[in-house]
Amino acid sequence: MEAAPPGSSRPTEPGPCLSGQRGADHAVSASLQSAAGTEPGRHPLAVAAVLPAGGCGERMGVPTPKQFCPILERPLISYTLQALERVCWIKDIVVAVTGENMEVMKSIIQKYQHKRISLVEAGVTRHRSIFNGLKALAEDQINSKLSKPEVVIIHDAVRPFVKEDVLLKVVTAAKEHGAAGAIRPLVSTVISPSADGCLDYSLERARHRASEMPQAFLFDVIYEAYQQCSDYDLEFGTECLQLALKYCCTKVKLVEGSPDLWKVTYKRDLYAAESIIKERISQEICVVMDTKEDNKHIGHLLEEVLKSELNHVKVTSEALCHAGRHLQQIILDQCYNFVCVNVMTSDFQETQKLLSMLEESNLCILYPVVVVSVHFLDFKLVPPSQKMENLMKIREFAKEVKERNILLYGLLISYPQCLLPCTLEKLVISPWTSNDDQKLQESLRQGAIIIASLIKERNSGLIGQLLIA
Image 1: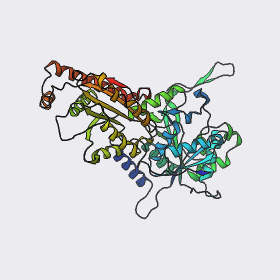
Image 2: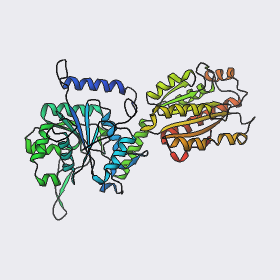
Image 3: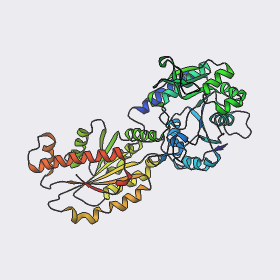
Image 4: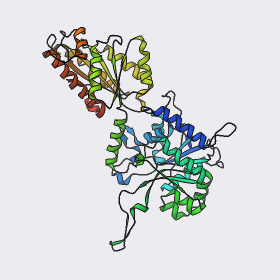
């Protein structure tokens, strides 16, 4: 059994903390402490997790085991580890991987700065892998750096969307009953074929449920079950709850799970998982400009159009001045999408300041961060071709920051110089009247659509490109 290397510096909590989630996490943790009896004078409930990750992914139909398949260029198992790491009351996470993938797993832990992870070698079957993970947590193991938990969670390495409230429910139920597992309604009717390929019987769908993960057990219950387990069950079995029932006569509690407990099994599931992750990290946009106090700044007008066009997304604005204190807080709060406004200039000074802040923050470790460098230029006075040499520098900037997981795009918006600040102030509160006004309104609307698309798709093939709204 090997412990993972500790990370040097990392965000306080890995991954995006969506709106309202921080408070919810604290509430869930408080609920667990109450349910586990962690009142004054009582010891907190010790909880660990075991993830079997030794499968070869035959049903996926790709040479790479599915737990290591990339989603947004990051292995799937890293997302699952992140989901468990966010739960502060899970003390240890033991991952069972094959010997040939041990170094791959170590590199994943180091690159994405995962914590509280220990590795054991997987067995030739799922149950044998889980048993190896449980052995690492048992007190009777020589030189073990892990301590035996009171409750152990067993979860799949390819179910990345498990939430803390579901983990809480199964852990609390396991503490009371000895074993508990998440279930979901059956989607399809289950039938049993006869030996000659004809229908033998079908199950009444309303009376049966699909067994899902996570599952939780009193450690002594599930460890004893595996110690008593027959070779046949270890070789061909797949249901941990059944072992607790069969070998320890434990009355297993079934807990209704949420729809997002699904397992990545087929290649199409990778695309579905990627779509969900993209959606989750695209819920906030920060518009960065060179001044905050000037309400007539064209950047504020772009902000208003973004709010109007993307009413389901939180849009805020911040300044790069004053040492960027507020902007640094937004980065710490894990916003993954930035629009940097540059007015009447084709250089990238402001954008470079933002990129430097992002690189220093470690925000980009787990998810690709999108930066759209928006340049407002008067195409009548200065045709884009005259500024192209400067603007094309975005390609080398984009290539450089892509190595640090930042996706940099360029966007040009025609901004007639005749629209002075006083005119812009009127545009915000009055109908668009002049031809230039209408053109700017349409350019801003097209710009907002392009920005939304770049953020949603996160297409690395378009980095360094200059788009015109």
